[in-house]
Length: 149
Image (cartoon, rainbow, N blue to C red):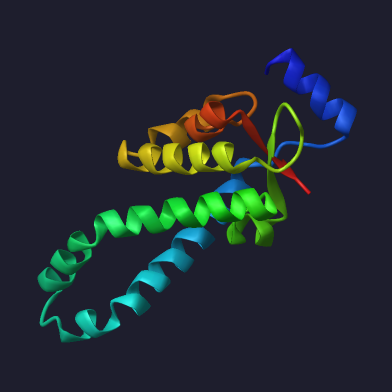
């Protein structure tokens, strides 16, 4: 891990969030957003006659779904330092430089690169497994850490 990051974590007496906590927070957020999409498209889903029609319907709204994910992640990260999943798991996102919640640009950057990581077979998330600071691509580009509360 970067010596500067280690020094900041020791000084602030905080620890990095575990991979397990982050994965569970991710799962919670994905379930919430999926349910929201299903509720929004309920009339169309209920009119679908088979699974293929449901898949086609979902594919028609993929850009809107990605935009919804970006807005959700950016807003909650900027406002609360955490998405609903992270709040449940008692972890937060902090900017390395300020050790505060990310500002608007950092939150938006993090949210966009999070979706890009998902589109690229979750490689940005896999990166975090091997990174000493547990930073995924979205954390690297936004210069953030996910820590325990």
